[in-house]
Length: 133
Image 1: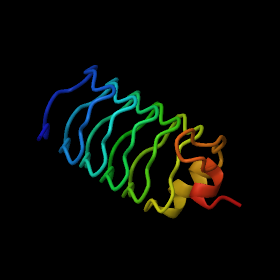
Image 2: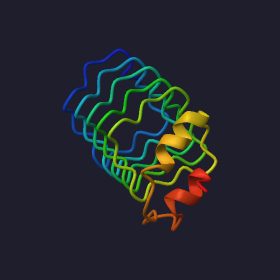
Image 3: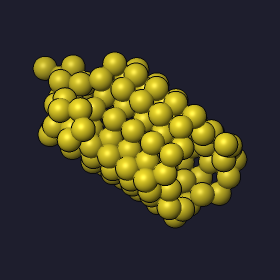
Image 4: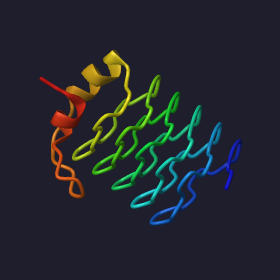
């Protein structure tokens, strides 16, 4: 299913099965993806400011060049996700799992500064998943 170039601000996708869906170049400001299955989804070059991704599974997703300013990423799973050039300003990553995710060095440094908690689904500490010292 493709939502590319779509206007999806404030849409409710909570709890939905959205595996391998495409959301490229979409506006998803304030959208709710809490508890959604987004494994393998493509969200490249999208706006997701203040979006709710709490406990969403984004394993193997392409979340590159996405503006996540103010987003709730608590307990989200980013296992092997590609997150290059994504903006993480003022995000909540408590309990998020970034195991084997691909991030820029500057992103890791920024996220390690706010990383805390343990993912409720995987049992992985956020700091450990980012390789924080």
